[in-house]
Length: 276
Image (cartoon, rainbow, N blue to C red):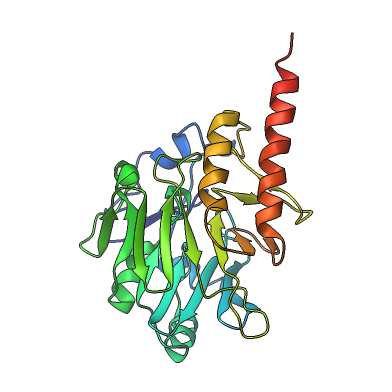
């Protein structure tokens, strides 16, 4: 039986003879059901009309994005480390070309997700490469396709590889996470560290500021105290570059300073808006 994917958010459901009656991810207040209504596809159907493109962001970091765009149009990031490779966040399309390229780069040691909007076909990725798929336990209820490859982590941090640690920030989702890559953003042979943020921290189009929202499409903000807490957690880490969820959304130098001034700007404007 097919495993249907929501066309709006690309999350994959368990096997069923008929499409699901609804998509709980899209019906949640952080996402939306398109005006045209809910639509469904399958991984097999996507393989017939889409292809993945690759972009090197730095020597050991690749962005993978599908064209034409699928669902939310996020990108996945492939991080190479001496102890193995990590796929950060998922895209729906997993095809033979992508599998061959990843195996040529050393395969995968794991998959890790920032939040439910990017779960997509994560089980297919985990099963294809025989690796754990790391999901924060606080977001367990958003799983639409249970599988033994899923690893639910709890608490505030989870080491997935010697050079990569997940940090729960919350904000967008209770289990919203970023990945701290200590070996990233190398300069002169010395790593400065990088943050893989999904859109838990949203790199903005000017690549000078970072945004924070409970819902981006529905324009639901976060409280300033929550934003400051999230920023403080990240500013306690050593990193210089930040790589977001979408094409060209990265700050390759001065990322920590951008986060600090972005949190300050957020508080200043929210407080100004609520003044009597």
